[in-house]
Length: 84
Image (cartoon, rainbow, N blue to C red; front, side, top):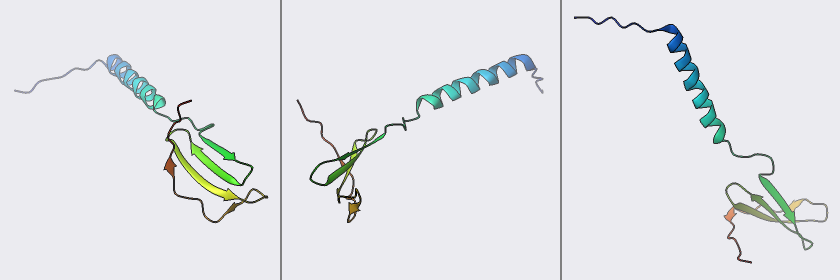
């Protein structure tokens, strides 16, 4: 015995549109911020740090008077917050 399934095209289109809107809404909320994500700090004694504000990773290096890193930039580490 075969069953005949009838689908209202208007309801199908409306359901597909609703699913697309929900999917795009969920995808848009999971995008990490890109502006201001990386912060660079250079001290007077030539130490420099690049901080990823999303993950908390920090890369450190020494810079010369021209602002160029001398040697290689170290492997990333995680910052621990200080209680002030």
